[in-house]
Image (tube, rainbow, N blue to C red; front, side, top):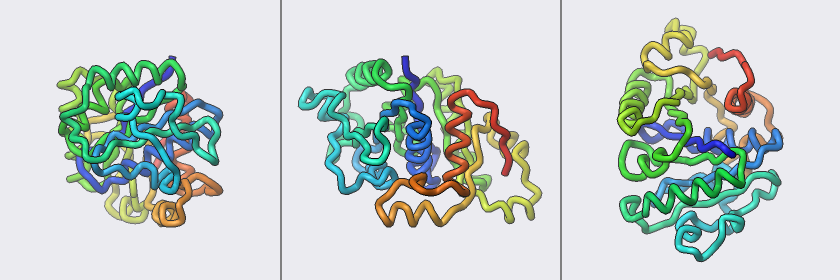
Length: 244
């Protein structure tokens, strides 16, 4: 039985979607069967981070409506064990049947080792839709206090939903600035009040990979790509040290 993991954030601009794509491709590199679902209705961008913007992906709403089967999810051309469902356009999150979506996720759990859900930023209906069935939630934030505070507020919303397995991923960390401020991993954890799943450095390759229409991890073994691989190993239960 596979695991459902929601990738969420308290605010936009944290790089949540690129982290979701990085983890999905890292897990696929390790031979895991992975399904990525873009749950950001109306503002879908996960296809770009996965290098699939030129491919014809079906939406999860198409599967819910019975127009396609889950097995019709787009297979990634570079990662044979990775499949993708995009988000529908012009469809308010409030109009999506939450119970039907949960049933779809349970079906996906039976076919894939990991199902990664790219949740919309904030704590509105789309956030709840993506997180309601998740076994664990990774909250992505920046290293600045405001972003970490927003992640903590999102964590409180998740706890009210009954979610307990919450972890923080701090993205776009400038190591020199962090060092000059005297920040440590423990400082970040204390401020957020959440266990830390990983730290991802600032990396221009994230923007360049999206611009060239390819996944970040494809042919890239340094900086943010390496960080995503380390987090993927932690997801699988390996003990990998965390550092800034």
